[in-house]
Length: 265
Figure (cartoon, one colour):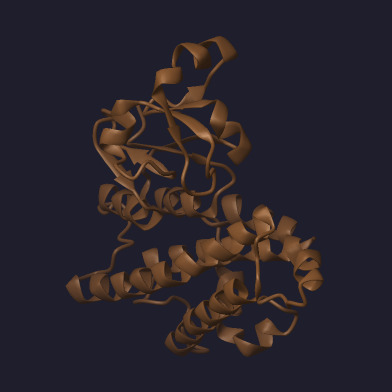
């Protein structure tokens, strides 16, 4: 039995925060899921699984209306799922008994780090390093909020100048702070080894690169890509750090092919 089970739409860089951490810490993480459009045919539960049409009809009383990403879609969520995951969203993580739920990708990642702390300390060497790591994780949430709104609006065709401007400002604030925290000599954001701060950063930037696939849509609205061709020159330390991380043996299996596919578009 896995130490932690995660149910989510896939591929999802925010889920990979946990799987990357697991490789460092030797924690057994099981991931279940499918592309977003297929999750409407799944049972949302600790024992999440795709359902045949006959099963879906017999479980129709469990239908709840999706609110984020799958807005307006009827999703079959068990009472046990909603007790463990009160906000009803994915990624949704569970302890081995399926009763304890952990939600939000940074918290799921922290759970993995705590489970594997004896093998590799991703959460800093002391309370001060742990708190500085938390600072980076909290700042990432501010960026993640606007980036999610932006990426979903690109996906459903609702992007406009206001959404674009908020995402652009959020990225500038996030990247500027990271650029300030790094230096030509630093190889990690906190301390002397890779931490949760680095994992979170790499996953969030990889997710934001989905903008690449929507360049034509932006052009139609007279908007430029936030990750434009010259962005690496604006934040050289940030992107050098990103390049180092996605080439790392524990990051590479998840993030390298994902980023390369996006950049190819």
